[in-house]
Image (tube, rainbow, N blue to C red; front, side):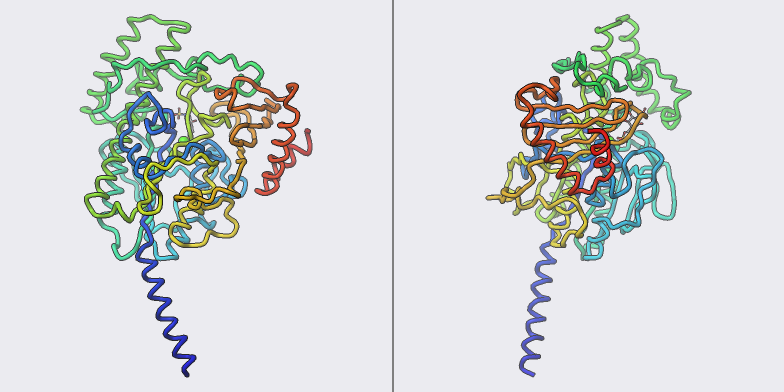
Length: 511
Ligand code: SGN
Ligand code: CA
């Protein structure tokens, strides 16, 4: 009897403890933008633009210098966030026509089982509809910048007047306003910005007109010794379209994105792009390098003007948290689905294992746990995102998730021993839309070793310390035999660890 009573008392004590623990469980907001390059974020030292609100997250928390993605395109990155798994296991390797299998385990479903209220708002881009959220309201496909359609559970699809970044923020705040306040929450805010074709909000048109951006040192890369880089179709010079991308004499009637504009929106837009940009283009009569450089300037102006609204809206969300007493107990993460080229190697787009698209911005504010101004150099990848979020909620990660919680390495006095010293990457989508040869590889603090397969069938090796711009492929060069063998061993180990049988077969067959 006594024993029973003691057990009972213990049970009460435990559940009170669990309740206290539960009360402390943080809310989590994951802001996930699209194609936003770290070079365009001032917290990363980028000089191109000021991003005071994104910077604020890092200043009050941590900034990751080596946050890498495992497959640098949109859908696959989101599928990895949801599942904590590489593309070959979650089944979403390319954007294409594939549909994400939403019946599989995902981090938000686990949170929901543990009493979290969950939502995904904004860009989703996974072909199928979200499963297992309390609420979702998404952009169909890539979504539109102006007067976009939104979809909700039950298939309701409505066109909403306004600019996409403002709307996604409005809907996110609206969900917070109406949430069940007895539960902690996890919300993903998925932005379309800064995806191609880079349509800024009307108020930001011309925001960078008086700026001349420096050409990246690799703008005129000749791709010597790099067959895949030479074969791509993603240069500003040749691939970027004057009309659709840079809005020079757009066929406004013929393009569906402009058919969605209201007459007032269209007028403001045309006043700028016809009256100013296209007129300047006509007057200059550029060709050759001068034209490529003009395109680069216009690209950055549109891209950064689109990002300006993104930063402003992130400020709006942070202000909401402040004003409603939520900032202290809410983790805020800002990340992009991958990095992006802003003229490096002459490119826009992403896909390659090279630095600008491999590394993605990642900043996190976690009051009371992460010390303000923390900088993390360890290799973290997007398979770590789901296990980390579960860890923050005090929930064990599902056993077959392939990442690890990074909380131990980001906390004061962080335990860095035993953290990964090499990250694995595998990109698949070929040939459309940018003709980037599939490849897999390994990235350590200092080196990248990559195996391209498909039409460009070759190895590449880079020493990031000596060659941060990755112009010199050292593979097969004298003096690099030992490091190549070490990296090759690491690559083999990772392929086995993650169970990438396709990569294994390619290595076994051809090398
Ligand atoms: C579209 C773009 C491509 C871009 C992909 C994938 N072309 O196809 O430039 O690489 O999306 O982007 S566009 O003419 O339609 O803009 S992702 O972010 O969704 O992976
Ligand atoms: Ca993207």
